[in-house]
Image 1 (cartoon, rainbow, N blue to C red):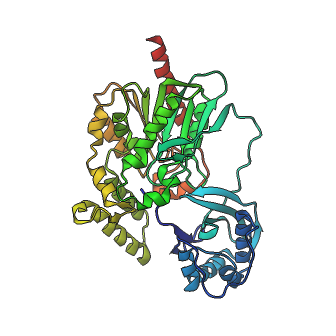
Image 2: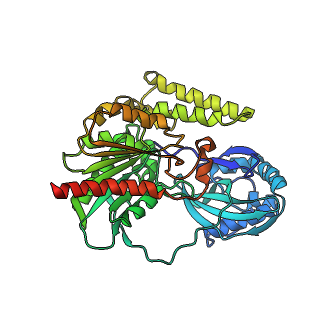
Length: 461
């Protein structure tokens, strides 16, 4: 799917203020003071921006920075300044600004600025697009992680994945120390544009898994998703389906590893997260028998993506005991959009619904995931976090029910883990993602055990 439209949340960490939207290209608004920022880093710009906000220098904030088109519209109509004024009434005086750090967020480069205010501490997250400010939000206070000086017991190499027509996806091959050949796992992302680490705010689940597996003697390959690297091309491709978006590139990654030094070509596994796991049966049909040694389904749904999205939105809205009029209006708009997914024949192929063209949704409707999963002969491991609200336990139980008679499938669920296989509670919704965490060692242990046992079985045959 295409990148979702950027939502700019101007809020206090405890008391919500208001919701704004911002994405697009630069647009000048009003008379702008001449301020040279070309030699400043994004971290320097973000830090100065927050400093001026703390000083309540609203005119300078509105006139001395480059904004994207939608953000500029908020400057022009006074919404942005009004939001800042409301926010500063809550936060009061700015006491200290900590060292900024950079994260990737929905395809944007985002600078996090930890701040200590009179009433509370929080992080300002300022996102940039083409060098211009594309969004501002607040998040739970946290400082930059301190890098460990201890040498890692593995090596990471940058290896691009060729996907045809001269296009490549940047990727990382993580190889354990020692002598190979090593078993390897290809990591396949969930829905939406995503980098190779599956970065969400400060969390990088695929990096955690890759490095954790390397410490257990297992190599891995992860790569930036096609819709992340070629966003403009994907946005214009009305014929894009999950095959081009995800499946074909995962197949290419498997075939590349078959010819990669230090990798055991007979011991290549595929681990798919969320939509990536849902598509494993489709991927299996495109590979020759024996090309993969096994599959790992990570929080993979059985229900179609459209049905799952409806459940997710219903759950998230249900968490608000007394929703505001704005929230009610937002829910109504989303419900109307989701309703279209039940009547796809009424829309043209090039019309867009929930961020994807009708062609994309129609193609998914033809995919019978459980029927295709029944055809898989390789060993499968299905893993699930029991506090996952995005792909809830009902989906995991459906896998167990549909594949109960297959001897090649194992099922393991983890109490206290979310969709990212990190600690959290379902009733917290997406709030747990705001915290910097790491994938549970239990999950990595389970994957490593699965891979190792299969490898040992083959050696003994």
